[in-house]
Amino acid sequence: MIIFLETLGCSRNQVDSEIMLGKLATHGHSITDDPSLAEVIIVNTCGFISTASDEAVDVILEMAEFKRKGKCEKLIVTGCLSQRYKDDKSLVSTLPEVDAFLGTGACDHIVEVVEEKQVKTLTLFSDPNIREFQNILEPRQLTSEVFAYIKVSEGCNRKCTYCIIPQLRGLQRSRPKEDICREAESLIFKGVKEIILTAENTTDYGQDLQDGTGFEHVLTSLANTLNNNKNPAWIRFLYTHPKTLTRDIILSVKKNKNICSYYDVPIQHACSRILKKMGRSYTNSDLYTLFKTIRQIDSQAVLRTTIIVGFPGETKEDFHILMQFIKDIKFDHLGVFTYSDSLDLKSHHLKNHIHKDLAEERHDMIMATQARISKEINNKYVGKAFEVLVEENPEPGLYTARTMFQAPEVDGVTFIYENELEIGTFVNVRITDGFEYDIAGVIA
Image 1 (cartoon, rainbow, N blue to C red):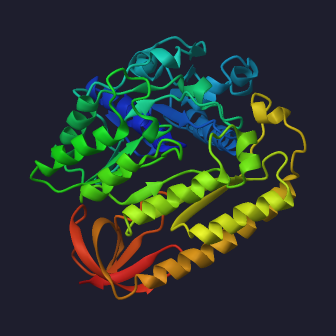
Image 2 (image 1 turned 90 degrees about the horizontal axis):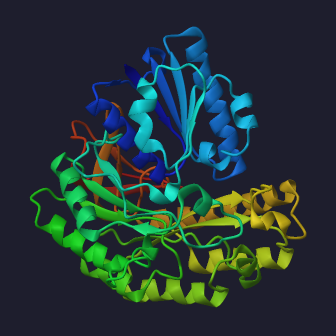
């Protein structure tokens, strides 16, 4: 059959999608990037916050039109939306166009569900805790020819009051270090130029293991593995936790030149009072110390964070503490979310919820401040040369690429004014222009 798969949400979802597509291709099914040609459409959903759930429903309904008017014979919904509302019977009744719902622990059943002949709506919600990691011998259908994500662990043991991930993904299960390195090798062999390690909290890696292996050991082993490979490649890691981003990890990054000095540290807030309400196990002082330590060890370190504004009980003073922290640290990249409430969150039961208009106002204030900071930082790059990874050729004479300090899909890009570059190669670029979120230059 001809399959189309739409992925929503985070990098962990993208890995799940690539594994599902790989299983389907192995069993003789064809993959298309055009839903109008598909006989089976799969929507791998995010359900982390309400806006993600709303987007997922909109996409499902959009895809259902191909079932009503086109070639599509079966519509399947997988991932976090299915898992989050698995006990809500209205999910099935609200979306009668869907032929099967698969939770996060049931993605391994995608082939049998695609090939299932029955018409009645099928629901599979296996316990996410028992799901095994992908066997590296099973092919992944990569969605980028340049970079690929690797999960180092699945699930989360933390109890943040605004988050439902442990219910959606299960408790933390760290993947064997050797398996991570073998998969990276196989991806590099296929031509991938950047390996991006991902998890709910990458630096929590190993806390469930008995042999003392920590994330710094994964980084060092992977760096050594790729150093012994003929094909150069970058290593990047995302979603660190401030409490487990240790000095040993920072030193591992500093020591290995093929690991990007790029620290994605979602702090969520910077006011100790709000952090406590969020269930985050650190304080404002801890955060100042962490970022000072990173910059003392590695002066070239690039910092990214994400924060939540409008959390229940956030006062004007709490917000000012957050704003001052952002001005003090000067993150290279920063994302902001307004608090998303739901009945199944612990934070829902907290007092003094913030009106959405005030939350949006605070969101806009943070973004305006960050835009000025980003522009200031990007202007400092003008006149300097950097190695970049060429990714796309959107129009004649123009390429998009990324430096080590730009992660795919979440940060800005480096524009190159040039002709006849090869996608997936490393070149040196001298920066000529700095913008709010992007930079541009010419071949050095």
